[in-house]
Image (cartoon, helix red, strand yellow):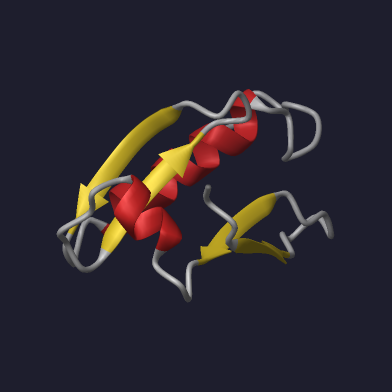
Length: 83
């Protein structure tokens, strides 16, 4: 059983929708059979892994994935039609 804690990260709009996982006991690491550092798993509101990235780099792409997931769950406020 995975029993790790999550911490809310405040967004620019004041909400705390983005969650960061703290896995001090490596429960998630083992559950995913992870062999990489760093490992990023992007999970949508339905609990599906939408993307993963192993190792350093691809920071801009990771930020785009986060923004896409936030838009998909309507966490960034009303859509203004601007990218």
